[in-house]
Length: 429
Image (tube, rainbow, N blue to C red; front, side, top):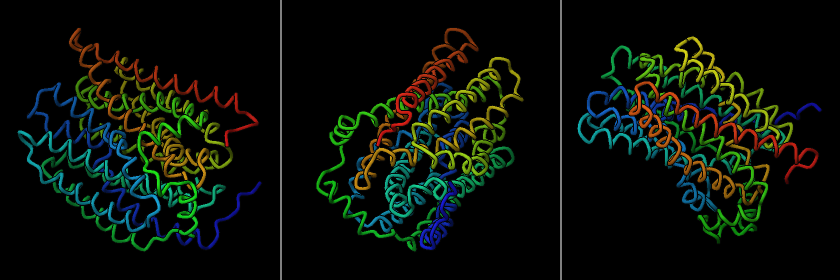
């Protein structure tokens, strides 16, 4: 069947979203897990002990997920309210916090304040993601949801690539200018907020009416509501259980690689940024359209059952490179991580739509991102603590800690495939 083309209204709304998300993507790139972790590792290398610095790297790299624990606050704030105005305010606050990171001192308590600022910025971004989900669900029909929003994700990724590329060049040539780059990122965040005020929600009354019908305006989204959703929707509960293992492994290995690339493989900071951020993000525009067609063609369970194996492949390649010391394999791993990320972005942003009614879309997204936050709080520090413990036993033994994330991700992948087999021909509604 030939996919139906978007209508004039959908196309107009889509065009209005491009510039704000491209600009905010630049700001986001400066607090993206791997890039921010390398900036912290490099910027505070002589100002803290290696173990303290590695833990800081763990929290910074996990900040994008950790911050999502606040999703229930944002979900409650947005329910039954005008989304565009709230999103514009959040984008402005995000830009201000990102810009402020460049003002903190690079000595003494500067490391702690920087880590807290990155977490604060990502907390605000969690609110953007939570509220944006409902806007997208209202504006774009399901049969083209992934294709339209996938293009928006692409322009955001382009902005993030620009930020990461500038950060890599500056770290290699003029590291003292990194603070000024945060200032530029803050300005682009404010510009994104200004432009986003022109956005509209198609039939906004329909979204508010659906939320009122579901009781969303009267019932606060909380951990109790989250437990209720998981109890009443066993398919979604099982899906998120598989996602917990899959996502925890992905979060854990990112923090470990930042440390291993620096301390064991002794890669330059610029090369770390390229391998961990730029190459994966460049893959997003290339491979998102392919993943989007796969997503639109069926249920998210079928999508995840295929997409997960790319991440498994990436982990196998990078582990081979770390143990063998054959660094050219790192480029192959970076490419595979990027392909997996392109698909994971769609699955994470849109997967809950295949389980939720319109009035509960934001609540379901709230459950998803809150559980992601719990993974972000636990997985990266555990991965770094395992690495540190093994290094204390024997120098170089820390690399064996990579067995933990690949085992967790493999567990999630097997779970997705079992769900697909059981639901074949009768996907959850």
